[in-house]
Image 1 (spheres, protein in one colour):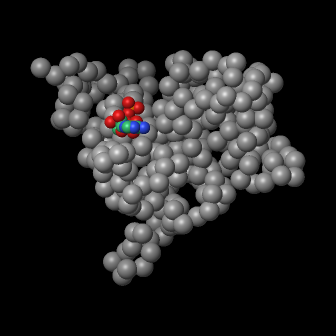
Image 2 (cartoon, protein in one colour; image 1 turned 30 degrees about the vertical axis):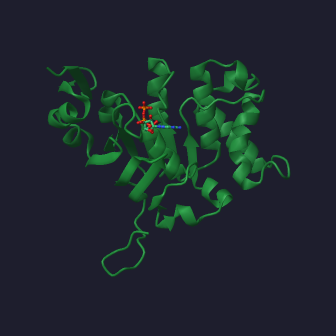
Length: 270
Ligand SMILES: Nc1ncnc2c1ncn2[C@@H]1O[C@H](COP(=O)(O)OP(=O)(O)OP(=O)(O)O)[C@@H](O)[C@H]1O
């Protein structure tokens, strides 16, 4: 549990992760990670393949149990909450999360209402509205009646995002949300995430594309070999020196001539 100088529990808003350690076998794949994701902001979690991003997200989501550390959301210790209470606050869209069940898209999105008891008493008006709104936000009305197992990777990704939206989380965790998406769908997904942050949702997304991270995120956290090595404003954090050290690339930030957003040019180092 994090505490202030007086020893009182922290009530800081947003996500606060302290000394989080995840072990697989005898290896710490996440090693005493400490960082924050500001409230109502988009935080990009970046780092090379195998850095531990998925492992860290799974631990924050409560899908895996860390061996040490604390995860607080808006001052509440997520580890101390029951499953349902946690699921009302935190939604997680895993990378390539498949489903073997031949459910309709609408039913899959409806699963996002499970923490509100929607399955027990049948769908109530509020849940039905939440499902409709999530389907509209994710732009998947045309898929509504389709079976999830028969969708393409990108279509499925958008359905799983809609399921998370239907959950009405305060914290949205996403593992590579732009994976499988074409360029227009990537931009639509990022625009949607920005809209959610505007509504006060705290978003933490693992992203491989550093250009997208710099252009769209408010905050970045850099993970390298299980350790958080930097965090802060994107361009101030993702410096050419840091990218050389972490990714072994020679990197230069350019400016998009149309949007003014940062664009990364990179080549192998040495
Ligand atoms: N089930 C597992 N058994 C053994 N090792 C694992 C397992 N899952 C992950 N690892 C190891 O843990 C480390 C971190 O993996 P993780 O998937 O968290 O990294 P990542 O940063 O998300 O990688 P990527 O960018 O490639 O998706 C890697 O070295 C990986 O090989």
